[in-house]
Image 1 (spheres, rainbow, N blue to C red):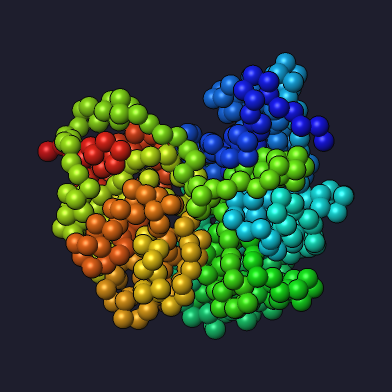
Image 2 (image 1 turned 180 degrees about the vertical axis):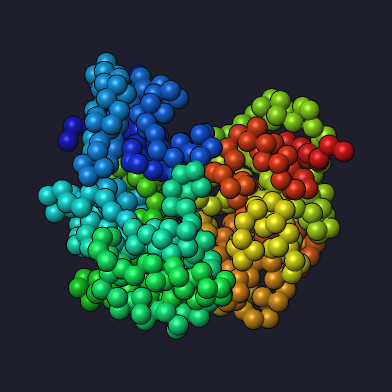
Length: 536
């Protein structure tokens, strides 16, 4: 392939698209580094909304210096040219004017590229698992929900494509909707995570084997007794928990068997990279180190679901096709790829509110006094999970803090857990498994004596979905947690996304709107030490 280098900027600029029916986004790569990633839902304020990714791109970016635009193959969902012909014509015309080129990459190939090229691993097995997408790893475009690859420096080579009837993603969505009556799309988003949270309170032995052994289990289509399990779940809250626990149990057994098959077929790897929406099941991914202790590293990128395809298609082109070497991120792949906002935008958003200049130390003190604080600073996080820049935080030492945040702020079910953001060097002292989890990708069990100290971030089975925080991953957040550690002896804080049944806040105005409609006590703009309180 001929390398197209923009003459004006002398930079290899690639814009990747994710143009599916959900998780619409675009990403900008400049000489291989992701400099921006925008998810449409953050701007429409509707979770997992559908929309015109090309129009979203054209409305916000100057393409005069672009070398390539990449997208994933979308034959089975209807590609951009069919769904949004006018935008497509504009994009084609623009590329013709600037001498750019449009490239398509297989859906699962893009997932695999996102996982491997976002890691710091030179070689790895890569596994993608989702609800379905087109793959061209074999040279023939086909539908699948699971693939295996091998990453070697700047190459991603296909190993295996699994038949489409192995469909954990669609099965979980069907189960979530038909059994529990929960949302699986806009405007509330996919609530499979709620079911995962319910599972910790149930007895997996009651229904786990029956679900696992049903012929319709994990099938995207075909008969499964959803109605029967719906009836059971409606008998009582505990029965709903038991059904959810059975689903989680069966899922873990099936996924473990899948990995065992791959490791038998292709050998036991030291490194494993994962992508696809199914790997958002952090309870399942958290057990992989226990299942396969020969694995030295397990990596999941911050955007493993379809919004990450915008990044993955561009990474695949840059490294695999154009043969450019890997990028050194000087730490974990940056999860903070969204917008950043100046002081003028912040002060404009808070001009009618009560605010003052504060300090990190004062905010730490407010936390210890049992206040709930929302954080806004730096670039917004890409992905489903807030990681300190658009977060709501609280003191995890109080047993009632989980209920306070669920009822006063998040307005969601009482059992939904919250994550601990923990100093990376303290993980070994507080959790049974020492693991790096900078994007909240893994659930791990607390040490018993430690769990008692932070009840607000411990789930009912003694686990927590931890975010490990280092200086390299988020310098400000690291120093802030360290100050809390010095004040309390606890190296972690409760962290949840800054939102209320909507996408994570993106702009200062979004932050103020969410702050005003909830019972958050304080809003702290960390870049400018601006502390906002409720008007009296």
